[in-house]
Image (cartoon, rainbow, N blue to C red; front, side):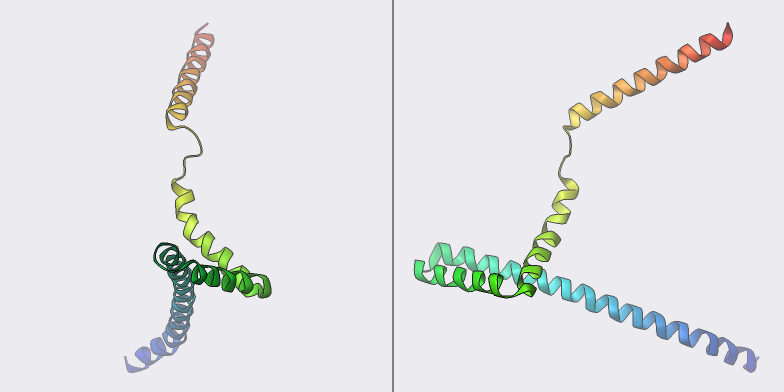
Length: 127
């Protein structure tokens, strides 16, 4: 039985190591995405705070700093677009593509047409 348990360990150990590596990589990717979105949310909150409570000169300085980063660095453009996409993607899932009442009326019409078609086919079959 000891040889069997050693054989099982030899087979499962690389699989466990690969699974652990996969979990670590996933954690790092998710943590980076959360930090990216969190950093931009904090920056947007700082801009809102500066609009409300700080002098206009400071707000202009914050905006000029951000626009300078955006024009000079590609990574900042990519990070800005990624943060917007990650923040707006869940909203777009709930965004109605059509009017729900119109969609329900269309669905009822399709069901009625389908029932009529089935009735016509059954009448032709009985003739």
